[in-house]
Length: 240
Image (cartoon, rainbow, N blue to C red; front, side, top):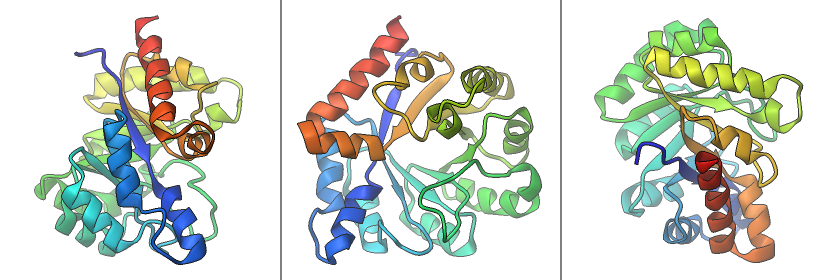
């Protein structure tokens, strides 16, 4: 189904809740299983350098045992590249990372870091891992993504979610450019029931990655219902 749009569910904040008490509950692996059972097309986890939520043991078990594509978000470091090559998730999404940030604050500056990114991406590609770059919807960043060997870009929708004027137009133009550049297009950050439809309607976008909002809504109505509702909105956007 060429018009199908996938939903990747980010479960990082399940680990945040677990880590608040220092125990084993709730278990990210169990939640990943529940997400897939409810219709998630993939699972996203961010193994941060400070291990503030997902831990190495979580990543190992999820990559090995969840029967759905795993998208491992990571910083462009030697440590994370080595871990990814060992775990061999379906895909890796390279994101900018700062210790002080609460969440990812913007897209990766691929233009300024091509020399560092190119050899890391070559190693990941050689390991059979699909490489995505989390970028702002800017033509120069998309062109640089091609130059460093990435197959996918994930467009940062944070500014759009924060109601910055003109962002939907920027996302629309960037998504169209990905097709011309031969990149697969994903999108994510800050997407909700209220704002997902215009983004999901963009025909070039093949996947949305959504986490924090879904986990918050799941507290009210349950995880299966939350995932089903989001997928319904995405599918309706494609049909509209």
